[in-house]
Image (cartoon, rainbow, N blue to C red; front, side, top):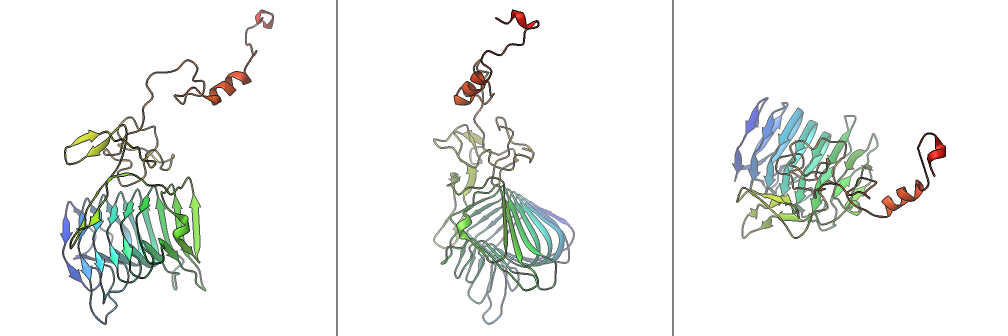
Length: 328
């Protein structure tokens, strides 16, 4: 599929094979691709360095993927790099997307990027694999452009594998370096091979995100999972179109960038966006709620604890009666 400036919605693209991009070759354009599933596509051609098990991107401007699932795509022997995506030049973004079970027989289970800038916001990376190294991002230093960068925010990395245990590799070059920026992510920084530049900001951690039902490799193909976050208050169950209460509560709830809008997240949401693919949407897992008020809760955090006692002690014997003679 060769795409120009357009909008593609609610499509399933599956079981295709190509030389560069098993499902899509997007070149010198900038389509918006929304609520699409791109699964079980592949590239493989003996003796030729083909790339991008699902998608090949070249020199696009403001290309956007929104609410997409990119699942079970493969760069097979005879292929080269990028189990899901191979990218050369341009700008593109992925919002509220799920990358699961993508595989490269060489490098980068998800993205191999040579030049340009790519952003991931509120995404999930689960079960991606590379045969040689780098389960998710291989960021090459640029040769002819000012930068090669990947920026990730409010996203979750879990159970991605490679022989070296490397999640991302950031290369350094003679002209300039590759760059990885990440903030407010569930990510293991020890799995980042950083010869280039890595900028971490916000609150990041490495903890089991407690997905409702993550995907897995079946007999022949990847079986897609449910990446809603477990919540003791309730997570959305698409199969029953209902809210289900769990025995566990994901640490990724209310853990995104506090300056980002919560969007359509249902109440209660604590006013902070969730990490992951459903953060900011009507299917975001719910937060604990504060019912009423406690007289001794001086900090307003719905708990009476040492912080409230400290506030009480700090104001002991204060008085604001005028005149002051009437205080005691």
